[in-house]
Image 1 (cartoon, one colour):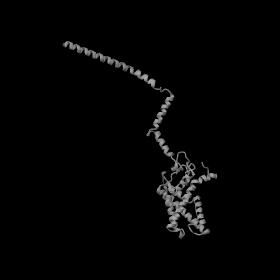
Image 2 (cartoon, helix red, strand yellow):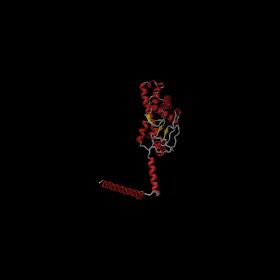
Image 3 (spheres, one colour):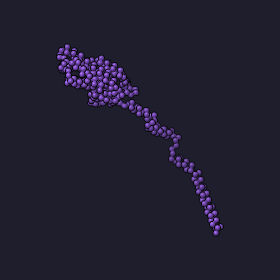
Image 4 (cartoon, one colour):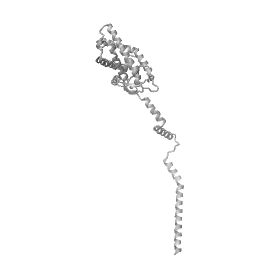
Length: 293
């Protein structure tokens, strides 16, 4: 009985060894054939990379993928370029835009045309800018027009009629304009870090939009950093000039009510001046006194 049992165990052990040997052999065969199978599968599905066209496509795909990465150099450069090229309904009020290769406006130009780059003004530059405006021919013309209108309609300051009162009106207009320029541009513009120049919106915009834009420059200006903000230098400068009128205007034109009326009239004149600044270059181009794009 023990012999039978031992024989059965021996037979089972031999069978198990045979089965393991057979399984190991099959596995070895499969492993040996695996490279061949992989090579066949790769050759049937992959496109050879020896083609120059395919290499170009791969390179282009790789470049475009790299450019889309936020930390890649090309992404950063494109981002900086986009910021520099941003215009202008702000950067120039959307007029002048400081981009590389664009013409540079004169440092003390009172208006910056579309496409021009403006040079930064320091506090001292703004003082110089104000004094240059006081003695500019355009300011003298503005003084003459203001005094002539006041004389023609006999409005404040009420000096009367005749050449003598007309001369007084010219003197009063010169004093008022000088105080407006010096207080607004030489004092308050550096204090508030605002740009005293006018940025032309330009002919690429609709006429109505340009009219509205110019009118609103009385209360909206551009800071030294290029952002829009309340035109505090102009508003305060004109307020100082209106208050100073009480020192040299006729007695009937002095007082709180008369000062407020004078202040409002001066702001209306400022709106007219902004409109002239917006369209003067176009008008000169029409009569062929200046080249316009």
